[in-house]
Length: 591
Ligand SMILES: Cc1cc2nc3c(=O)[nH]c(=O)nc-3n(C[C@H](O)[C@H](O)[C@H](O)COP(=O)(O)OP(=O)(O)OC[C@H]3O[C@@H](n4cnc5c(N)ncnc54)[C@H](O)[C@@H]3O)c2cc1C
Ligand SMILES: Cc1ncc(C[n+]2csc(CCOP(=O)(O)OP(=O)(O)O)c2C)c(N)n1
Ligand SMILES: [Mg+2]
View 1 (cartoon, rainbow, N blue to C red):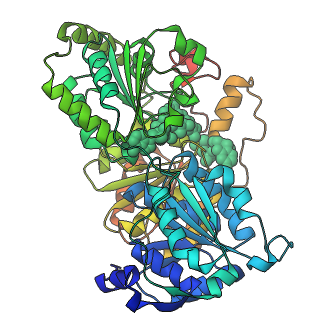
View 2: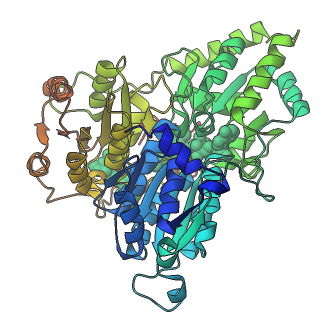
């Protein structure tokens, strides 16, 4: 549903002659229209009923009624990750907001631009333990980029303008706007949506310091064992083209974090795979042994560098490009910090390389590549591909990738072993195609992410790779998928275990499998059917490919594929807790 130009113009009208007397709730909807919002995921309740009434009177924004507020935020978050637009969710006060907390924290940890509107009890009732009151500003403060409590309807339009600006600028993140019921009810003179916003205390830097970029250039061009380590910031900053240009110009090896997959094409030889706890040998060894590291929009997460003391054993010069100064030198000491937007900084770096007379040291680079190829030849992602007895989870992902690699496909995942296998065996060549929760690691995101994306991208194929544990955390959203006709394909790698927990118990807790086996699972085929969808049970390796083919043919249906996979398969490589990133377990023979 496109927003008409007339509607946008009326929402954004600024002249005094067009002053309208509107309820706060109507101003809020005008603000959303002026921001170009097309979808809002939400759930009603007493405190937001005026806002819902204002939604009823318009038809440019589609509201999606979810089945749980957590899923509203996840769906809007998935939409934001796939499109780059700000995702919007709407929840009521009290339990509506507390249900949304996991979704907000998930978006916050991965720096996703979102605006979450919550209802609040009337201003006069705040602090009186009113029905469905909770301290939204207090509860969400540590998990938002910013939050607002709107006390006067006159402030609503400007607050919304600020909320969207803060959410999408600088290091993106979720912003909560808490709207008391009387603020949404009272009338106010509306002169149009503000066309600019100024905040003295908030001015994110876009352009990197020229001198620092020049220093980085010298280091990079003189490197003997260079390495480019990129993360979610490249996707958030829409800088994949610049990254590709840079890597092609230099011919240096490159890796992505879990959050950065797709920032550089996985099928290119210069890509060494994901690094970190479940990264490849070549990606982790290059990280440890490089002499110059260019970190781009990546935050040296503990799952990436392993034991920091081990990481620090090898000397390397580090250049770090990040829009958030607080990300720099947070976990490792950096030699050349460059605060700025990745797109701007990489563009400037590329221009400087073009003008420079210095060229990368071809002989050193060729030796470095030989070393890397030696690591790569260990083929650390090999697995028992020919197994005819039991479905290997990796095989499901690899088959899906082979089948869909040339299609317009989005892959969401939940959290656990299946997430790691999806990251390792689905080779992402394009940005914003891999949608998962990395920082908070939130089980339950998979279905809501998929339905959020499918709404915005109805022509694309959207797959959710999940586990039988995670999928039950937001399974009620199968109902939303039917109501809003968002046909997604769910590939559940059902190992009957909270597999990632079982793996840790096997490796770190001497096989004491405390509460990681899931008995009494539902019949997922019947469950899918009960929700009005198609269910499939796949138990043999030879049935994997035909099942996926059949599911893809059912374009207009949501299909739940229950793949019974090897219950005790583990994710390798693996870096155990406290170990260095090159101290990897490569298979069960290492246990
Ligand atoms: C079960 C499990 C296992 C995991 N295992 C691994 C693993 O093996 N390997 C791995 O990599 N991760 C793994 N993770 C994910 C890990 O927890 C982190 O979420 C991830 O490593 C962080 O990725 P990132 O460094 O790219 O940071 P992000 O969280 O994506 O942060 C992006 C950075 O870019 C910056 N930025 C944002 N916008 C811009 C811009 N426009 N310009 C410049 N900078 C910008 C931000 O300030 C931030 O510092 C795992 C997670 C789970 C749940
Ligand atoms: C909400 C939430 N609770 C607990 C965890 C801890 N946790 C991480 S992975 C995992 C097991 C996931 O099981 P399943 O979805 O079946 O995936 P599998 O690992 O078996 O592929 C658990 C419990 C989490 N990440 N999120
Ligand atoms: Mg499982």
